[in-house]
Length: 138
Image (cartoon, rainbow, N blue to C red; front, side):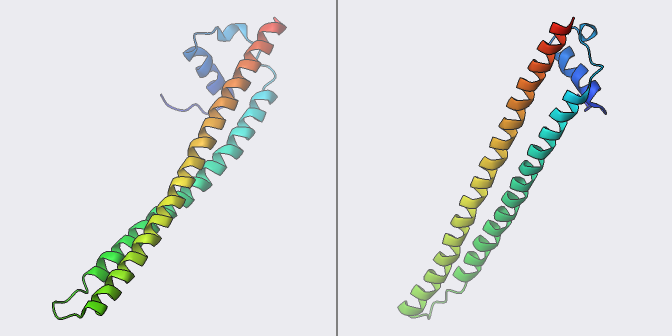
């Protein structure tokens, strides 16, 4: 379903989806809907920040992993044991950096999920409150 252009249209769409009677509600005072929109905007912006950080960490994971693979390609048949240990040490360092960035990425994804859940929960509660208030005014 496409997103509507105004809060009033979005509100009407939610009511239709919940099988409520739109005509029975008093929507003359739309300020409460605008406050709801501002709250969602701020939380949505924080979700975008978490998503951006998650993407950056994901890109770093790929960079570290590729560097580790490149380092492992340095192995030669005529290398001494100490030289081989040094190559493995360098590759392991890149691997651990990738694991750390992967953990950061997961933390940011948790932030996105939590913010999205808060937006949904708050929006649902506020919409229910608005509906109840509108029903009482009748």
